[in-house]
Length: 226
Image (cartoon, rainbow, N blue to C red; front, side):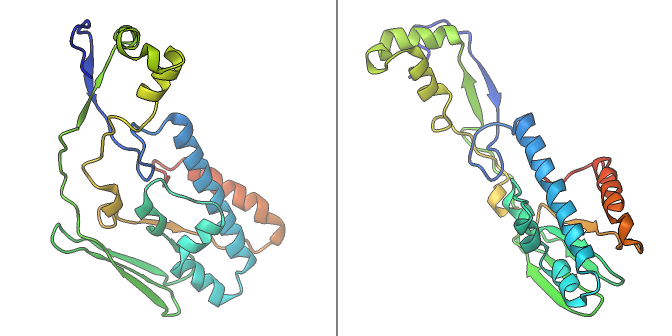
């Protein structure tokens, strides 16, 4: 269906699929806030769990080696699938994370090693090339033309205009745009996000305040991992 025989007051804009959702359009402010809050909550819970197990060297090593497992248990689900395995922690002396960047032909690598010598390594997918798509823009029709379209063609097929409008223009099944960076293949392009978990306070009575103060510092970071 085109706008033929209707007023030509439409316009075109570019958009992208929300990472990891398959939905068209940028994430809304509410969705961004939910993701950020989920990350902060999971980080706070991870820190509290690390402090609870501070004298258990084996469990502390496991948090460093398998952070995605603990973050998932504590409620962190990233919008971008690659980020679910790209958040890394360093906790005690000599914990290290080494990220080696690749290119479009061969991926890099990500190596995590604890101070005790335990190691986990992962080969990353190659850096994707950006691919422009034929559907890289979408036409924005005026509500006036949509109403004319409904009255002329679709009135007998829907209960009312609202039903037609919701089905044809408010769902994501039609006119979907895709992101040329292939979010499902961003293992290398997304890099990695390293978080230093602070040492457990010597005085147990200070733990709650110390955790609150640390999370307050996190809200002042010039970036988030959402």
